[in-house]
Amino acid sequence: MAAPISCAARAALRDTAAYLDAVAGALPGDPYTPPVPDASWLSLSSLAPKKLRIGFTVTPPNGTAIDADVKAAVLATVAALERLGHDVEEHDMPLDADAMWATYTNMTCVQTAATFDYHETVIGRPVTPDDVEPVTWAIIERGRATSGTRHISDVEQLRQVGRDIVGDLSPYDLFITPTLTQLPRPFGYYDMSETDIDRYNAKWTDAVFAFLFNISGQPAISLPLGWSKDGVPIGVQLVGRYGDEATVLAASAQLEREMPWRDRRPPVSG
Image (cartoon, rainbow, N blue to C red):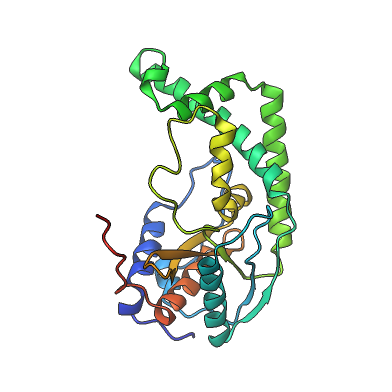
């Protein structure tokens, strides 16, 4: 049996695994029921993972730039995993991420509009522009203006893309990406007073590696494994196979011991 990782070194991941044990599961009839392991995720996260085949990328699939510090954080993580005995190789994702983002946005606008339609039944009156931020109102309006046939087409496109993502990454036990392609943006960069939803969403290209796995349904976790020159934490994302949260948690705990962050403190802003 693999040797356990010390409790002191894996405190943060221990909490994550315990939380997953507490909330995960499905009810009869639920449309999506990923497999649950025989043992608890908490116990599985305490074991060092077997030798893994790991892919990684530092190339955004929408052709945008990546910050040098972010790239360095990913490469340092990959080097650590290689030192730990895992097989690693670079693999860039062959996706039209901009087209996927547009489709994903259209789908979520409909879902947001439906959510606020439900809120109206709770509060007993229609939701108005005075109740929400301008960008939220723009999302609601687009959702309400989208036809049912357009929405079901968007959903089906994303299901197919999800299969493509899972298939593309199927050779790997774990896939490593940046969490964001850029360092955290300054306060106000994401302006909630924006009324043009397309202009607002264009700023979210920093998260191109995050929304992909909302589509594919694969388990993913962001770890603060990097540190910018200005003392800002940098997230590195670990993505597992569908239903294999156990490997994601075990590899994360191994990295928590190898690249500990518990004593790091960002500077306090004025």
